[in-house]
Image (cartoon, rainbow, N blue to C red):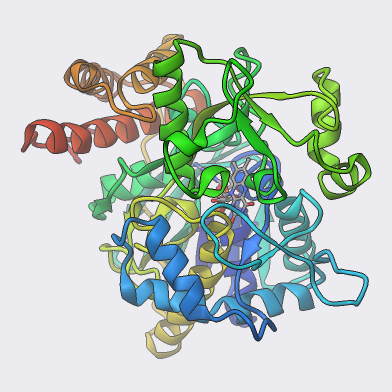
Length: 501
Ligand SMILES: Cc1cc2nc3c(=O)[nH]c(=O)nc-3n(C[C@H](O)[C@H](O)[C@H](O)COP(=O)(O)OP(=O)(O)OC[C@H]3O[C@@H](n4cnc5c(N)ncnc54)[C@H](O)[C@@H]3O)c2cc1C
């Protein structure tokens, strides 16, 4: 197998694939997928992708206003302008690549409504939009002769070299080294740092931890979104999401007494942005003394529900709930990361030649709270921009032979002790859930630091458990450091970049 590429992309979700597709065909591209090709957050997205496309009554300006309101006006005005203005191009391109958005009887696209949007501007494929986008992008990328996609290929380490980057990759228990001129991290979110999350098993923040180690600034990692309506069976780590679109189509939230309660907290009721609804649920839980909450769409036509939400309907039936007749038990859980590897409007990180896009990046478009369905859009818009910038740079750079870093691997080293990831998850769930527990922050931070030091001090077998434990510890440490900074002022981060991590 070729070991040298113009561009290596870590991540095979919407951001990684769209980046690969958007690069010029004369550049060689390697795409890494930690596990199965469609095991990622992109494939789980239900609601849709937001954007103003062929919709004369709507405008990018209105989309921007809604994005700003949801984001608490902390959004970056430059990147948010780019997001809303380049949405039409992104949506048009994926339609041309075969993405089949639902249409109305008159042939126009069916645009749905979600919390925080003032207009119907969410394009969707039933209630499984992400899977549709992911599989169509993947199918197209697999036809491209310049793109190689490696499944079950875990990025274990990345080093900057004189000519670009060297990647240590574990594939089928073998260690491989790949080199590239430019690198894109599109490694997704951090949901698995929590006990309860909607995120896929791959979401352990590997790219963020590795970019941090390379010296790339990380921004607003404590800006974490908790989705208000995850299915609450109180046992499974990956909580099945009940899309915002269910509230968009008229579902009510009810408390333990089966009463609607949102009018106590926000005049937008069930259609308030996610953070407002999640906070309202926590306040209502304190008021009533009960964690029992429900989503109720039983007043809508059963045939409409089954047709509009076939995947949610079927999944709930498997759990014993018929959403056309039963109240659906829900509770907030970790869902999305607004912060990440800080990038500019071309997805450039603080490390020369390293780009980041999708959920692992911080473009600033989401402010302190993402507006529903803006993240698939962000993944597409900014990965295309990364591709454009890389193409421009590589067209004018000398193509020197690529230098390879010599990674040290001790194949006799022991595996890490069990339970480390569980400890980190417990800390995060306790200290930094919907409303941070100020009394738990410092203890949590200390424990994460101890775990990081322990993993650095000894040599362990380099495998998925080890890489993910390091990533989770690093990510949790940064989140809690930021939270402590906010709560108590100036807690210094002191991770030793040279400690062999
Ligand atoms: C249940 C759910 C529903 C959602 N619904 C919506 C929605 O309706 N609309 C919307 O806009 N957004 C939605 N989102 C958010 C959105 O899906 C994600 O933010 C977006 O898809 C992220 O895309 P990505 O390409 O950045 O990451 P992902 O799609 O998660 O891809 C990450 C990739 O990185 C790879 N990777 C990670 N670490 C490594 C490593 N060490 N080595 C090699 N590869 C690695 C993984 O294998 C994977 O291929 C939803 C999210 C969830 C979880």
